[in-house]
Image (tube, rainbow over all chains, first blue to last red; front, side, top):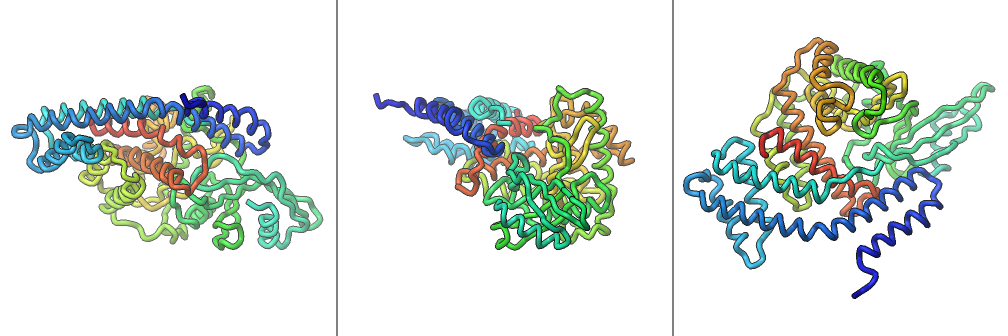
Length: 147
Length: 334
C-alpha cells in the first residue's frame, strides 16, 4: 500500500492549513481564503470517493434511458429527435460508451420536453432521468458555501 | 493593492488635502466580481483634521463577471445624483499603469451585508422594514427617466420586443463559452425555452442586474445602501423583481428571506402603482436562475483555467444543483 493515501494527504494538508498557516495570518481576507482552502480540500476528498460512482451511475442511466426511448421510437419519439436518438444509442453501445454523445442526445430530449414537444410516454422517461440526474448532482456537489 | 501607490494616487486626486495618509488598507471578502479593499484616509484641510472611510474596487485578474470597467462607477454616480441609497463614487481610474488594473474609489457605507437570504435570526419587524425599503429603492430606480441620467455607458435603449431575446442571447453566449465542454441538460433546455418564449416589455428602465438580499448593507435601523451595480443595463422592470424574488435568494415562501412572496409582490405593486405581469415575471425568474447558473460556470472556468486564485470559486459548483432543481421545477421537467 502506498502511504500516505490520497485521503490521508488531503486530510494532512487541511491540518497544515488549519494548524500552521491560519494562526500566522493576520488579514481577514487571507484567513477567509485559508478557511476556503480547507473546505476545498475536504471537497476534493469527498469527490475522490463519490465521483467514480457518480460517473458510473450517470453513464448507466443515460444508456438505459436512450435504450428505453429506442424501444418506443416508432410511436412516441418525434421525427426531429430520431437522429439524436440513433447517435445516442450507438454511443451507448460502444465498448467504452461515449458519455458526451449520450448526454447530448438526452439533452435534446430534455429541450423537447421543455418546449412541450414530447408525448406523455416519452416525457415520463425523460422526467425520470432528469429527476435521478438532479438528485445525483445534489448528492455529489451540494454543500454549504464558506462564510 | 500597493499602499504607497494608492497614497500617491489619492494625493494627486486631492491636491487640497495636506498630509494625506492611507490607514488600515485591507482586502475584504465579498463583491466577488472585483477585488474590494477597505481603508481610511486622514488629511488636513484649511487647518482642520479630516478623515473619510473608503472602499476601492479593482478589476480582478479573473472572476465571476466580465463587467465593463466604467459601468458600475457611472451608474453609481447617476444613482447618487438621483438620491438613491448608494455609496458616493469618488474617483475612477482606467489607466492600467496606475494600479495594474482599472479601479474606482467610493465612500464606505456603514452596516453589514447578508450572506444571501436575510437571516431568520433577525427580528421580523426589521425584515419587514428592510423589505419595505428594498422595494422602495427598486420602485424609485424603476421610476427614473434613464434619458436624463447621463448614462451613455449603458448604450441605446433596446426595442421593447428585443429586451428578452437580447438578455437570453447574452447569457446563452456566455453559457456556451464557459461550460467548458460540459453539458447541463436542464440548463440547455431552459435556454431553449427562453428563446422560444420571449416576453415583450412594457417599458425600458435601468435594471440593477443583481438587486437582491446579499447586495445591500443594513443595520438595526434598516437598509443603508445598495451595492454591486456592475451588471446594470437598460431593460425590463420585471428583470430585477424576478431576480430579487427568486427562490435561490430566499426561503421557500420568503422573497429574499424578507417577506412572504405574495405580500412582497403586493407591496411592489403598491410602491410602483403598477400591476405585475406574472407571465413576464415568470420569464425573468427562469432567466434569473439560468443567469445565476452561468455566473457560477464562469467562476468555475476562471478558477479551472488559472485566471483567479480565489479559493471560494470551486464552491460555486455546489450552488448548481439548487439552481438546476429550481429551473427543472419551473419548467415542469421533473
